[in-house]
Length: 289
Ligand code: PAF
Image (cartoon, rainbow, N blue to C red; front, side, top):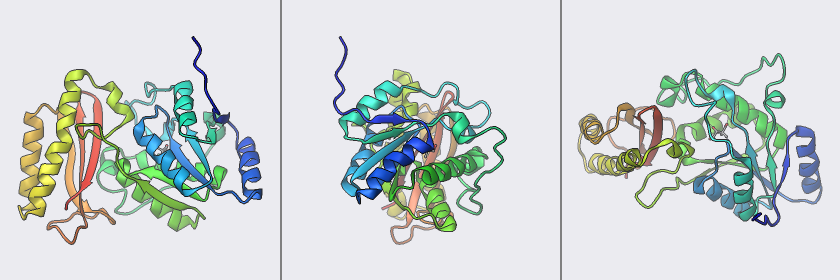
C-alpha cells in the first residue's frame, strides 16, 4: 500500500532552483533557517528542523553526502542514502524545501577551491585522527551557505568541534548568517543519536550505550575535584574493559577554544570522546558540571 505524504517538501538539486524559492520567500519578508545534513535522518536531525521552525518562517534541509570530509578507508561509499525516507520525515516536521545537490554541482570539473580553518580548533580531537575532515566540512558548509543564503544555519552539538569550526569560519569570512547549535539527542539509555549507530550489532549497541554513562561518571568525578588525567585514564580502562575496541581520544577541553584544561574552571570544561566498536567510530561530548 502506498503511504500518503502530506505537504512533502519539494526537492531541488541546483543553486538556481534553490535561489528561486529563497528569492520568493525573501521578497515576502520571510526568514529562513538551513539545516545541513548528510541524510539518514534521525530524531537528532529532526530536532534541528523543529528548532529551525521555532526561529524562522521557512526551513530548508540540505542532504548531501560530502565526499571530501571522508578519509581513505572511511564509510563514504556505504554511508546510508535513503532520500524517500528522509523526505517523509522532513514532511512530518513541516520542512519547506530539500536541497539535494549533485556531486558535480558542489565539486564542478576542475574544482580547486577549499576552505581551511587553521589553528587550535582543528588541530586536536577529530582534527588529528581525521586530518582532512574539517577542510571538507568547512568547504561544503561554505558552499551550502553561499547557495542558500539563509538567515540562520543550525548544527547539532553532537559534532561539537564541527560547530566551533563553523562558527569560526562564519566569523572569519563575515558571512551574514546566525549559527545555532542544537542539543544532543539521546536514546532512552543516553546513547547519542547518530546515523552511524545503524552500523552496530545488538551486542555492540549495548556496549555503545555505556559510553555516555562512563562519560557522565567521569565528568562528575572531575567536577568533584578528582585529578583530570587520573579520571580520564580510569575512564579509558573502564571503556576498554567494557568492550570498546579502541579509544581514539577521551579528553577534557575548554568548551569555547577547545584548548586542553588541566583543572576544571567555571563551567567551561567539556569532555570529548571518540571510540571504536569494530570499524564504527562513535563520538560524544558533554559539559563537566
Ligand atoms: O554534520 C554533518 O552531517 C555534516 O558534517 C555537514 C555539516 C552536513 C557537512 O557535510
